[in-house]
Amino acid sequence: MNETIVAIATAHGIGSISIVRMSGEKALEFALILTNKKDLKARYAHFCKLYTKNNEFIDEAIVIYFKAPFSFSGEDIVEFQLHGGFSVSEIVLEELLNLGARLAEPGEFSKRACLNNKMSIVKALSIQDLIFSKSALAAKIIARNLNGNLGDLLEKIRTDLVKTLAYVETSIDYADEDLPQDLLLQIEKMCEENARILSEIYELSQSKKGLIEGFKIAIIGKPNVGKSSLLNAFLGYKRAIVSNIKGTTRDTIEESFKLGTHLLRIIDTAGIRQGKDEIECIGIELSKKSIQEADIILALFDASKEMEKEDLEILNLAKQSGKKVFYILNKIDLELKFQNNEIKDFIKLSTQDNIDILKQELKKYLDSFDTDGIMISSLSLIEACKKASQAISRAKFLLKEASLELFAFELNEAINQLSKFSKEFDRSEILDEMFSNFCLGK
Image 1 (spheres, helix red, strand yellow):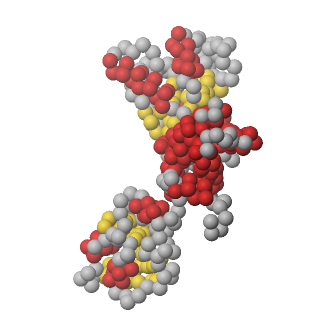
Image 2 (cartoon, rainbow, N blue to C red):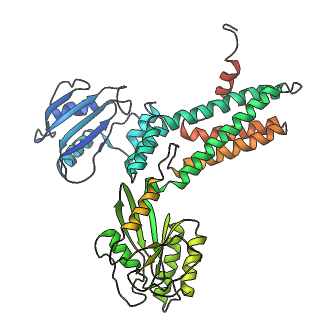
Image 3 (cartoon, rainbow, N blue to C red):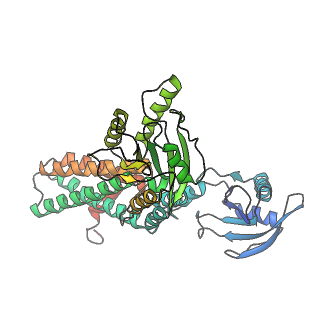
């Protein structure tokens, strides 16, 4: 933590501005060397000329000094706002490294902010989620986490559990005395409510990960139903080869496109049928794997052909996937021969004409993901919510069985899981809670 770290804080490439950020106890010292100045006023934008150690001119820049602890990381920070491009920021970075700074590791500025109590782990993760969010809707939901909703909620649950654990562990020492009935009911209600909240966060986060990562869509169907034409229609250009020859698409093709404010990754899969050669069989197996990995499935059928055994296989694969499925009848500009009484909500279109009706239905579904609930994206923290909820539910059951020692064990497990969002569980918290109601001076 005593080392001074530095990194380029803007994306690599050509732009109007490139920012080099430096944090640590020698940040100001190194900045003064580059600017040939005797001092920099804190939180003030200085227009400076930058020089190498050999006094060679580098660039004109805006230099801002943030004095500890009033900075992002809680340490002295200096930011250099340079002209964008590939070279200038690299030169400044190299000069600072030569002076003794160290190249920052990924996320190290935020890590220092957490260690210096400038932000919570939840807020740091929310910032990362906001950067990587693939839709405006995701950014909206994550902004609520940044505003403190998630952190405040989890801290309240953690406090409830610590207080309850303190009381129960005190009661274990006085086993001859039963817990009052009204208190048992309060603890039971607390367990039920907090287990429910954590379970809801888990379920919501699991179901809506696509908002952050980008929804993955798989187009499936037998050969020659128009899968590649549908992909091309979504992208607006001919990405996939379209041919009447069966088995033309022998591998999965994946591309990204925007629909409204949503970023989607769409996969054109090989036609699912009995493969004619080894390569086509491999492509078909990849198609089936894509179904499992997708969030949404577009099951495509040829309206101009009678239903066949391969169509039934496609229907079964779609239904058994457990994913959201849009059933589509293509080539409706031709004579209708396809009949299926099981699926009532086919979307009828022609990929050669337009697919606006499918785009509208897909956008409507994606927009429905808006929610007032709280979600997280980190797989480890999603799992922590699940484990904490399960531990609290087990504790509630054990309370009814009057197994206070096991009840306390499960509460400890839940608190330890929630500690992954904030701070490590310290047993002194239990003592603080036990003695908090003592008289002053006692």
